Figure 1 (cartoon, rainbow, N blue to C red):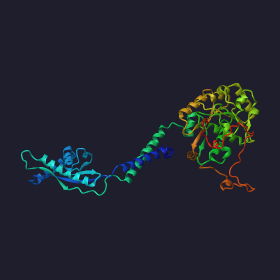
Figure 2: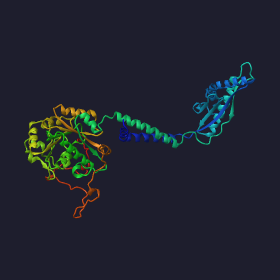
Figure 3: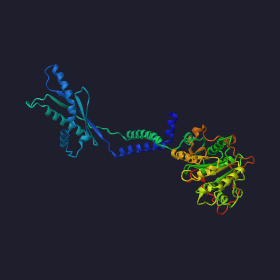
Figure 4: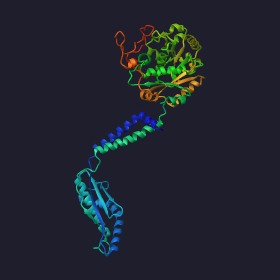
Length: 499
């Protein structure tokens, strides 16, 4: 992996790192507050031989003392010494001296140390001195020859009694917090890489292209800094979101220049990936160039396009398919421009059969002769077969997948389901992409504003101010039963159920 890829992994999984650091710091604080400070007292014993007749004997005695050190260290922490220490200090049989008493020694040395740790500095000092004294007595007893009760060849003497410690030996709050932060950071970074390795969701346009075997027409940013509006192309035309849809519009024109695709299905693998919002904005983006566009609300199970445009869906696609109205009378012209909308109509009990019927083929043929582009919003591919039933009557499909939501298996299965009916996947659109990813991949941060906008010139020649584009109403008045969304409903961006 390159440095940029490492930074991408850490940036995308920053929540894992922050959570692990937080847990590490909290754990360290809990340990520090829940455990009293500990004090450690230390004393040392000198091992020496008692018989010295000449230099050679002195050297051999020193070697004997060094050889005894390992045994004496084990003896100082043995049950005999610790039990006698506990008895002399009146600590009782429940005192766990084994975990509070320690020893230390150095190679080629005849000195070994005894340490004792306790919450009380005075108690730690008494334990250390008593252990040293008892150890010296036990060594003298064990080293005394059996045939001479007064002669001891090797002994251990306390060099200096332990002093009462004045500062705690246990780590302080600052040290524990630093340790908790470091451990949490290490675990968080490791967890971020593990999570990235196990993550099988689609997070790049190149990855989606490799799975679908179709070009990536663009990515749609999810920018928390931009006010949420479903029809970004119309209501927020200078935002990165609107620019993403205009880029998709341009790329769609070059999918097959020799054989222009006039009827296109827009679908996704599963629900919640923004297909209806993508269809609505793409239709508005194409219509803004002057091309006549018909957007058909082909999702006859959970329709959402009509609500985005504020159009009554009681009369629409199912009305035309049942022979109730001709296509020209059932469409709604939106804003007096080049965009027409055909709502779903009354929801039928057999949507798959209707979309795959000869009447639907005839409707699409009529629309092809009237409009420059026909976009059909359909349900997701994997849960239901509606999109697959309709696809053979069209020129192909655009497959929408959600960043970090659609798994590679779901995207692959969706593309396979569309091609299984001899359909053509024209391209893939990656939606819900974090703003930081769009900025890195595109090379532009934010918007590329005009000079007038950059200077803040939001006034017309007559002096009136204009801070937002004018809202265009639908071409037909809404009926009493209109399904137009309330203001609170219009603030959702690409995350409504079934979109």
